[in-house]
Length: 255
Ligand SMILES: Nc1ncnc2c1ncn2[C@@H]1O[C@H](COP(=O)(O)OP(=O)(O)OP(=O)(O)O)[C@@H](O)[C@H]1O
Ligand SMILES: [Mg+2]
Image (cartoon, rainbow, N blue to C red; front, side, top):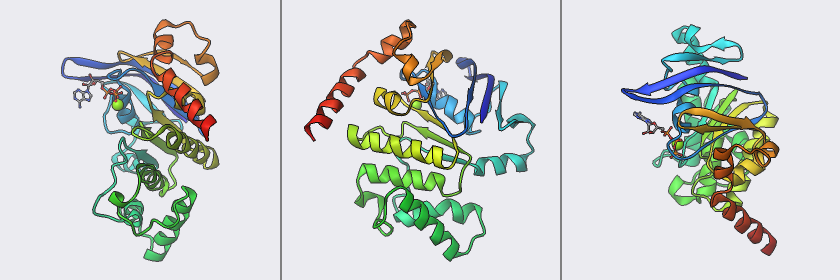
């Protein structure tokens, strides 16, 4: 569980996060939604410890980040998996090399132990025959699977995903969303996902927070989001993304 307590983050004069408080529970897919520029990525980077808020704090399973020693911070980072926007795989490494990378960096496992673990997570994301391929040789959807496999290879307690299905066709996007949700439940991970995709909201929005201009404008579940009369939220929900959903339903009907 992650407990966010009134965090503020500025860059120079630009006050980006203006006091956000919320909680993200274990075993749940928590979504952060909001318009472009609302502060989603900055917020996610605060959760990852890449940015330290000037005010407020973040507690991970009861431990306040600011109170941790450098060593404890390092240990905590190793309990975090991250799926970056656009997958961010190493082009010069094979699929296997990409997934093995965190194990090589942070553990003292033998080559055969690492291989066994890599095989297991690649199997978990339904990639069986891609070990020796390079990222450029596989589809965007497969690249996302590799990125997810790499993010979970260290058995993280926390999983952060920035727009994990951007650039994918709607069907593949849903498969990726479902995979993240299944993994979250199976391994009881506290998962936080940035998205501006209403499909994802409908598919996996167990808890949703809506950011607007660096403030938490609304929070609730996927069922509540269609009932709220918060104007900022309804403007977001019924923007052109709705047409994407209609299109996706149409495509599903065709298949
Ligand atoms: N390192 C940085 N230095 C200065 N300003 C930054 C930095 N990172 C982000 N910002 C600013 O913070 C604001 C929020 O950016 P952020 O990337 O969090 O938006 P976002 O909600 O993720 O948008 P998108 O949906 O387009 O990804 C923007 O105005 C951006 O210019
Ligand atoms: Mg962003």
